[in-house]
Picture 1: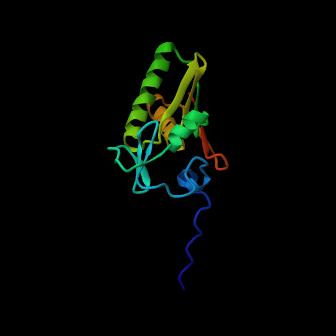
Picture 2: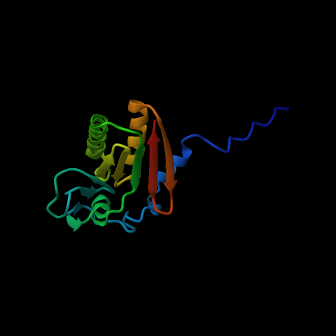
Picture 3: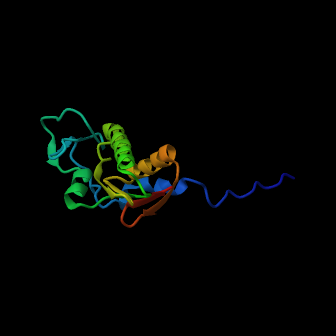
Length: 167
């Protein structure tokens, strides 16, 4: 008789971050389907075929506000990246450039992934984002480029990711 396979592990690394993909918990996502096509009156992102994207604005597009512009207007970030380190002015500038470059790459494909603000002093920096995926990407980029360690804390109730990076 063949032995029964062992039970699957109860914890699988990285699986908890899949919760970020559940739009039901994001209060800024539309609860009903938007008219197709729709265009954001602020940033001119186009909602077409079920997703936000950059492209030409159709003449028959309905006007709306995208979730990223709504978060910016209400100053309600979906991601916080706290950098806990003593940084020189030059290091803060390098990190800010790296973060802006990452934002540009991500925003080209995903219009809702934007940086709201970068602030800081010699004791560290705080970066706020409109999307938790961008905050996670910034934390991973900091770990890769500057080493150190990032901790991720996701709040499902608020659809909010807090990243704390230190070295």
